[in-house]
Length: 573
Ligand SMILES: [Fe+2]
Image 1 (cartoon, rainbow, N blue to C red):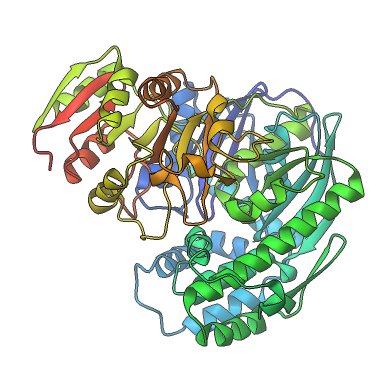
Image 2 (cartoon, protein in one colour):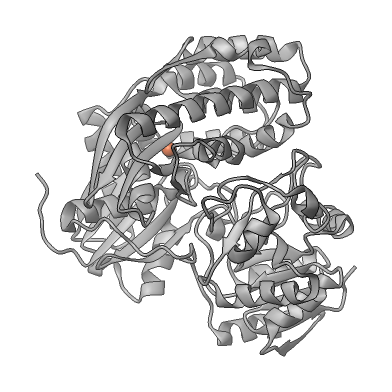
């Protein structure tokens, strides 16, 4: 039984894929960030020391002030990686194609997919707790209570407690965690209750991960590329889909027809005989069908039309768009850091729910990471050669001017975003209606695959003029919308081949960014801009002013707005 009582500071940590830390104080989220930003290794897997240090120092506290620490996932394989950390490091390097294919790869493949069904064993939980405790002791943590939060419970907590809904269905879907690949819960009167689970062996997330791997991309990272590529296939009906029988759905019971090993084998054989885009199309079509039917069944069963989602599968913006358009769905929220990178916050939120009963948090924006003082910015500027800079009290207007004149700008302002998306504080911005600037961005900075679209940020009030069927508003770029045909010019650089876009709809959560969008609207009639994350290809989003300046020099970019300074690169291309 848990000790009840008021806990002031609760630290959440996640030490797996996309590790990170989050800090709560008295029912407020003080800080949340992921380790990749500090180590500069995308989707870092190492124990989140840097994120923990950043969380504590941003809040002016020390390890001694922490009352409780919560972490997630104690399944067998995760426990093994805690005891033998070199194991997860070597999988990380292999998965990211940073090392050649190991000789024992087929053994690893066999081990990975034959252990999917192993859930939480009491022994593993104890070993995991001891391993996490040891890491924390090394960092100076002495007296704290430690809580292990079940994987999907942590996902569900992020969705439910930050949604703003008073009553909602809470659905989690991912590859796997603690022996499960999905859950259905209800959230009502401040209580989160689980009703259904999907075992890991029936995981639609593992299916999609395998497809990603088979088409030659990186699993757990390039699933969005598979989704984008699918639209380059010629369309065909579900009846002709050779993957259609891989899953069945009866109410809320999803069943995979084959075990993960056999499934991989069969998928590889089918993929062998067709172009990659066609195979991707089949997988995407199956996922969309399963997800919409599943959500529809859940809405009907519980009679609740507001749905909150989390879990890696929900990052598929095309599949969740289909779910959003279901007749019974009245409102939808997808936690912006829906993948395992959000588990640090989820663990902390659930611990606070258990200990103090807190189940609702203000979550206006995802601006929960580091911020930098003017003195620090000045020092970084002084230490950089080949640039000119000046204070700029009207940066949003000046940035809007440059963008509407065909330039792209680096925009670094305030606190770093939590999650995979740049939401106007670590962003690269350009005109939404220009192919030319999109090509320049791709050539010099982003080097994205040609079929991957950029996404727009837009003023919330302009969204219905630019997009079809805006019945729910999305502040976090988590779902796709169909672009109105008559707006295809103004949306030229941010629309996918199928005429959808994945927008951020901005209200009042970011004053400077809003002013920038208003500046663009004055010139073009629409408050919309191309917004892509501030990073070089293959690198995480920038953290600090120094990172921003380094990226500017490296990409020979001319214009940057850096926390109230305008910076010009004298060596710009
Ligand atoms: Fe997960």
